[in-house]
Image (cartoon, rainbow, N blue to C red; front, side, top):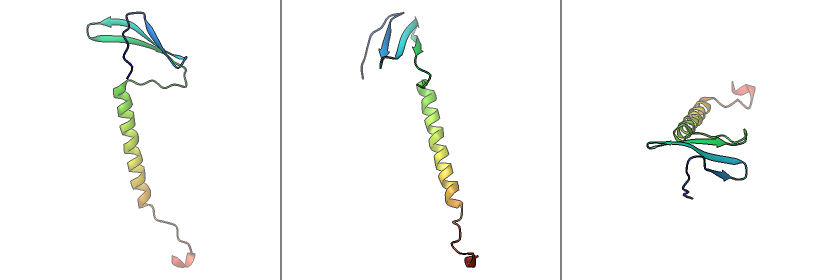
Length: 79
């Protein structure tokens, strides 16, 4: 992990097109501004973890539902 020290109004640039700027420091909170292309999704960590967990649950539920679907008969005589 790269660790940097920044002051208010200072920023870092990632991959030429993402800028993370320190907007305000208040107590133990840091307010960050992020400029990134619309094609880049930016999440707070707790939101990202919740989305990933919900996706895993949805995949498991979908797999369970699909296993309950009966396989088609190969031959009409099998009916």
